[in-house]
Amino acid sequence: MKARKRTNWNQAFTLFEAVILIAVLLLLAFLLPGFMLSHQMAARISCVNELKQVGLAYRVWSGDNGDKYPMAVSTNQGGSMERAMAGDVVLTFQVMSNELSTPKILVCPNDAHRKSATNFTNITKANISYFVGVDAVETNATMFLGGDRNLTTDKGLSSGLLNITTNQAVRWTSEIHKNAGNILTADGSVQQLSSSGLCEALVKTGIATNRLAFP
Image (cartoon, rainbow, N blue to C red; front, side, top):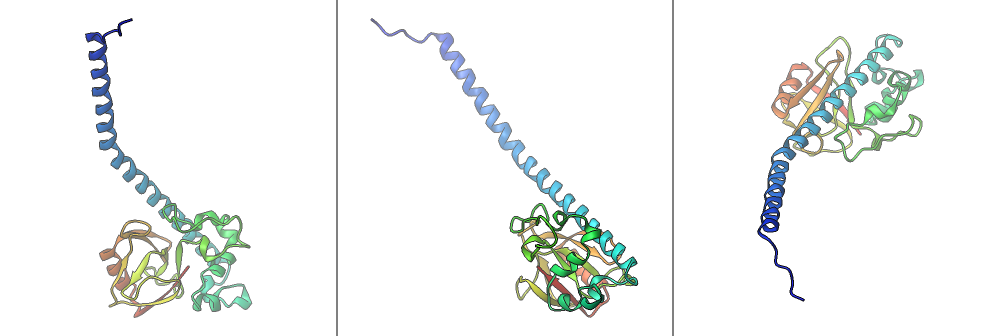
């Protein structure tokens, strides 16, 4: 029995399918970068909102503790001063657990190296994306109260206490927001900054040395 030859109609239909497939692939290649960018922007906006909630928690806590942030109150009096000065951020967030409500807001959606804790009791630095401004006070609105942990200097990025002078080169790494980041200032506002904007914000604090504790 002879094999049936493909008709011109079948050949034309196959060609049509190929053209459609190529068109779809080209469309996806065109749209995919936009989708990825939109996802990154959404994650960054979410990070800003989380930091604003953290800032609000700081202010509510200070209102109940003599207008002082936890880093300015001794651990003997329910604060985190001694631990914060040693570069530990965990206790600062633990003492504000009532104001923060959930530990989930301590992890930036773009931070692939941090995972949300299920509760504040067992929280570790691996559950925190944000640094703590050890010396921040409400009376100096431009001081760094917190921000994304991917801030670094020429000495490199590490956890613990980092002393940054106003004339020191600082920048964002590409780890979380692709060479950009967010800073929470002592007045509770959040700024999205480039590396150059970060340097300018550091100068505006008016503080010779900023002590920042990193997770």
